[in-house]
Image (cartoon, rainbow over all chains, first blue to last red; front, side):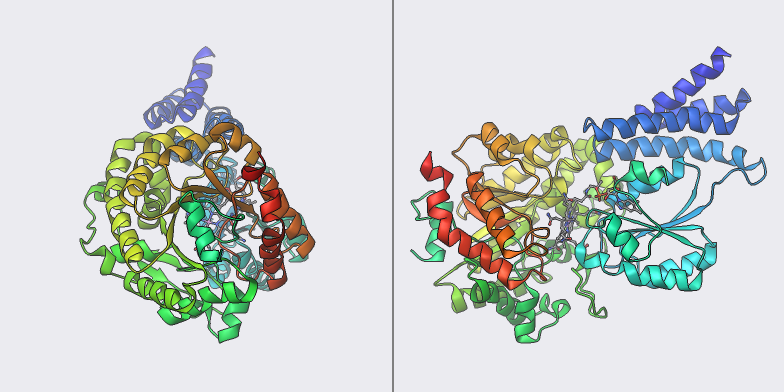
Length: 207
Length: 349
Ligand code: B12
């Protein structure tokens, strides 16, 4: 059906051109035409955000452009996601808690990582930045999330990570923890008992 | 020629014997804090503690300046934000803004900026610290301070995501806000100068090409930096940008500060290709991966590389990280003293 192709293309272009209205229109068209919501998300919105990720990596676009594309993508997700969840539990791949550790305001990178989880179909609970240790634990208990993502951009604040990891594991040995941010690396992650580390947002998505 | 003359004369374009080793960003160390038994969280709110610890960097490892303050909240607080110094936390943390003053796009044009910003918040306290430093070691070393660039300041006052998006989407709106902010920056910088600051570093650290395009930098960041610089023509200024800067070196040069400071990510040879050898270029010893975690031999190598890369004075790439070992910081100042004159590219060309 060429119509479906056109609508998917419109979803994709809307994201790449930071055009919220275009994405909203295309999302409604997709539903009206009976296009599978999951297909519209992955072959439309996600295709667009992948292109944005590629351009960002090439330094052809920068953080403002990325955030605008994310807004357009969220505009579409808001319309399409509820129609995905109707099919039983298949709507979400799992719950993720995300935050920048206490004393650290650097959240530009975390916001990009959050977007990657959103497009990958996770339900993200974003605690923001400068997040005290207890808040991670409490949120984990409240949401029973499978994954907790910690971000730190400073060497002074990353040292707070091992304790958060220890306490989270103490309360719930099954929880997976992933850490990231410029000063953190693979070695520190395993030394501190984290389950994963990713260098950047693109790699975080593959987890 | 003592350190003070070296630093100031070089900034004014006069003859000096060698590159200096100093900075325009925070210079507090854990060793300096321990010497006085001060807690980092309390230093920000006490002029004497601030001055004592700033001076300790010269006394402990021969840094050729003293700089106050250590945090990035001074201007935002004077405008009305609330700062968190983390007094309740044991870990050494840098202060952050916990309550912002601009909550929406509409408020960007209307949130009030007090006329007397320069006498609000901790501005008088930092002025006092500068006076104490001038009295203590001001005859030997240069006493410096810093202000935030208007864009980085805006990021302290409102949601940064919104600021980023608007910079791309509605530059006129952001420009109007930054124009107002640059007035506040100028007033605060003047007060710091009047208190005796020998030079002022303008830190536009939120505007690196790691996050912003050169186009947006030209359109939204540059005009206000230029305005601030032009209003401070009677005091030496250094423009510092963190992160990637190679794509905007020409724009930085056009701001017209007495010197440009760049961090480790900057390819110095490429920078000179773009801006030539005339402007003073400072940098670019990695403040963490070299000064904190490497050995003194590595520090020496990094300093030599910076000199050979044509740095005119050696600056850490950002704030000195408090836990940097004194041996490393000594290696930095000693290497500049020992090899500075000989390796100075400006003299050897
Ligand atoms: C922008 C910036 C700021 C802004 C932050 C605005 C904000 N809301 O984020 C402002 C101006 C406020 C700021 C303040 C300070 N900063 Co600052 N800042 C930077 C700068 C220039 C860029 C950081 C950035 O956003 N990069 C772009 C993003 C996209 O990259 P990213 O964060 O690395 O994220 C990617 C990956 O790391 C990864 N990732 C990130 N998180 C996670 C999490 C998970 C789970 C995963 C999987 C992956 C992942 O994916 C992301 C996308 O690919 C860096 C220098 C630099 N070039 O890195 C300094 C830097 C981080 N800052 C530094 C410092 C010192 C400070 C201050 C302490 C200065 C001071 N004197 O007060 C204050 C901090 C106050 C505080 N308590 O937090 C130092 C830290 C040094 C150190 N040893 O740790 C740096 C490195 C500068 C330097 N050269 O020394 N800063």
